[in-house]
Image 1: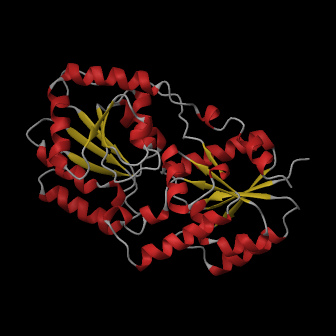
Image 2: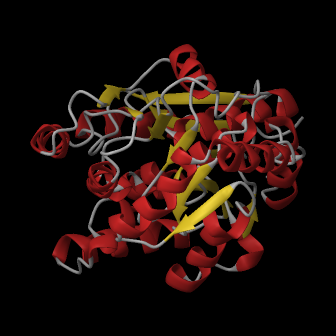
Image 3: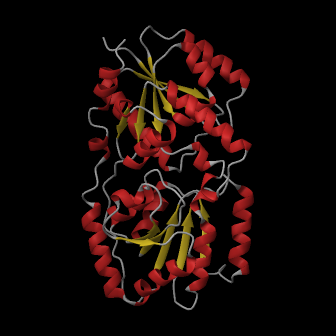
Amino acid sequence: MPAPLYYLTSRDYARHTGGYVYNSRLVEALTQQTGRLETLLVETGFPSVPEVERQHLAERLATAPAGTRLVTDHIHLCDLLETIRDSGMPVVAIFHHALAIEHAGEHLGGRDAEWRDLRHREAAALAHAALVLATSQESRRYLQAEYQVDPDRILVRVPGNAPAVRTPVGRPGRVPNLLSVGAVIARKRYDILLQVASEIRDLDWRWRIAGDPDRDPALFAALEKKAVDLGLGHRLAFLGAVPDAELETLWRDSDLLLAASDYEGYGMAIAEALRHGVPVVTPASGAVSGWASVGVIEAPADDPQAMAALVRPLLVDRPRLAALADDAFTFGQTLPSWEKTFEGIGAWIGAHLKP
């Protein structure tokens, strides 16, 4: 009988994120392929697991059957390394992108004590992982270059895609609908997007931003104020974290996706746009430039004026926008399904982590 698998996660892992979707789909695949996956759930994972929950987790791990393997997001491995190490279980770490990028301001040039501490903890966690599941070739490159992870321990499986209904982009006789998707955090650079909106205020458009505002409340408040100060409040709306059904409605009503992230471990919102046939304007941030080659216009980073200059002709030339949408949809259909993404993943773990 195959050795059991545990999947460790937290109840407060943000649900409206690409990481949550990816991990959930992975769990579904492993459950189907192995039939022996059990979820270990801690109540609080962010910003750190409380001591009492660590003790309960340690007790649970200590009573696991012999040969049990553990799958978890590398975020949890960084936080719970000592507890997991003491259990003696081999670990598969899911790596979306580095904590050093997400939290300590690497993308802003930060190299302070917090950044160094994160780098140290992240390096230790990834060194402990028996296997690392990376979401892009860029993530593989980062793991090797920044943390010297042996390439033989890394498997790249890019995020999959659900079937999508094509969006009728560029419909005549209506105001263009612009969309941005992603949590309101510094890395997503919504400050840049507000400047882009200001640069094209002379044109007709409506802009919706769908993303969790609670990850950085101070930043969200500053962005809302900036939108008002720029005179955009009646045309640009922060919708917060929206349910899947509402997000699907937004996709079907959008003409252009705009993103300005400093770094993406993959770029799931961009993939979703292309699957719907919605063109994209975005900087070449992290993994995006490595796979999103069609239906995407690459904008210079940190340059809202240049980005606005790329958006403007798409809003005034509907045939040009429609042609880009055709390219986006054609390319989007070549992106893998979730079933294809995780095909054989259980066998890979079993072959490399034998009890």
